Length: 172
Image (tube, rainbow, N blue to C red; front, side, top):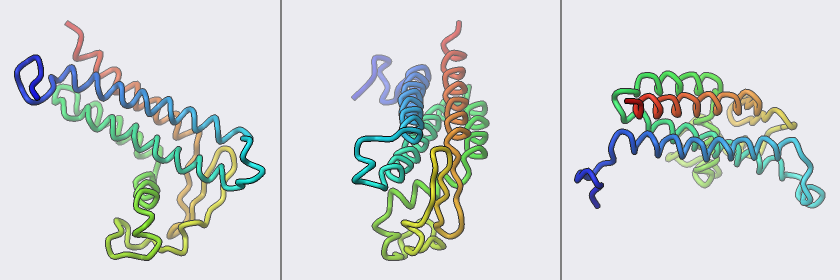
């Protein structure tokens, strides 16, 4: 399919608009999960691992925010600024890639498959962790600590950078 411009690829402005939209959606999801981590839910009495599940969804939402921002790096005029924002995000949310990969490929990690992205992570740590309303500690091959408040702030900063990139390109 071709765009209105007659090319197979979207314009830089359309690419940045899409990136901003995806990061915005992910940010709302991160904030939703952050709120759920602070609350009691009706199923908590029967499903004591509901917070663990919400932490997993929190990881997915953070990953989606980062992936959306990566789309913006395809636009040369703003790619350096967005890459710098992604670096700040990565620094603020260390270990996110490992947490995401383990969660996404749990089938490979559960049997210590050679296909694991992180061969040092063993099946023995998959369901070993602790959490409270602010912090997850997942003991995969050592503790991976995820702080919900700093992660949400990092996602907000990432969205601001992508939005600024979009707005910069759209100015006359």
